[in-house]
Image (cartoon, rainbow, N blue to C red; front, side, top):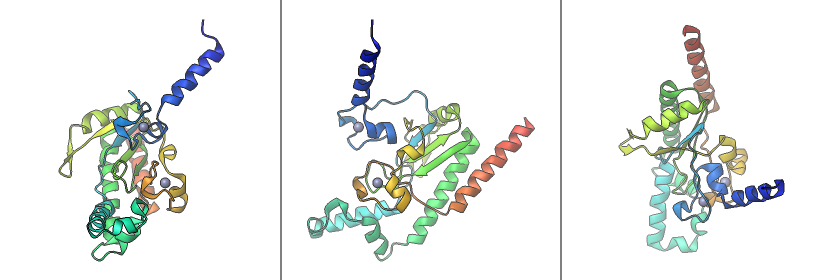
Length: 226
Ligand SMILES: [Zn+2]
Ligand SMILES: [Zn+2]
């Protein structure tokens, strides 16, 4: 017979074995080498697409990093915590406005396609963390688990922008839990590229409003037609 306290201890032992980052963001920097458990859910409302967005800032950062390594400037700087976003934006030839438009176009395209094909989207975010395991990851939280399951099964076999789509059902319960609170409120994070929580890229709130309003209209009229 297992007593209440034993069960509680058992549960807390199990919780201690789970990787907190994986549970909250669906990804962890240690990947398969992590000493904690990464349990992938069989059912979820959220699908995470690995590096679906090719972030021009991250690409620019990679070039800068290489240049700095070659010239030995990396050791003199603050290492990987240098604010590469600022540096990249200041660099000649990097068009910040163009990058922002590219992001907004990408967001609209993906939102509309997934919503029309698989079901109502509750929330969606594109991670802009300047590290290789989070950058470009797209989180899509559907209203229904069935939409997420079909989306995961169908899109995993497709290609996007010349790359195979890799996605999975994510343990992320909602995007608020996955995001970095500091970045969300101030667009800054002291942990910079080493932060393990999602820095969701920001754009014109009007665009998001329009997308969700159009989605609502579409599903509302569909419901009336049924
Ligand atoms: Zn982990
Ligand atoms: Zn952060």
